[in-house]
Length: 89
Image (cartoon, rainbow, N blue to C red; front, side):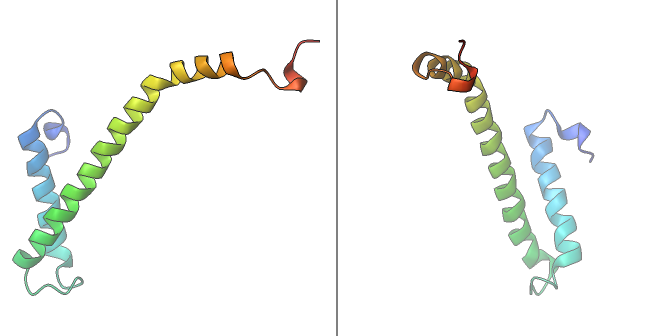
């Protein structure tokens, strides 16, 4: 499964997350102290889902802030006089 095939599909995104977790479990299960790949898989699935959730949250937060910027800058212009060195003489 490739990244491009998963862009527009919720099921594809979950499949990609599972594939990433399986690859991590296959290569790193001994490093985290797990007895088997299967035991490490649950840990890595949780980690991948947590990271994806954090990315999703930050993207939505950035969207909210970007949508508010025009109104914030307008309010700032009305309330705050320009600095002295930029004021017209």
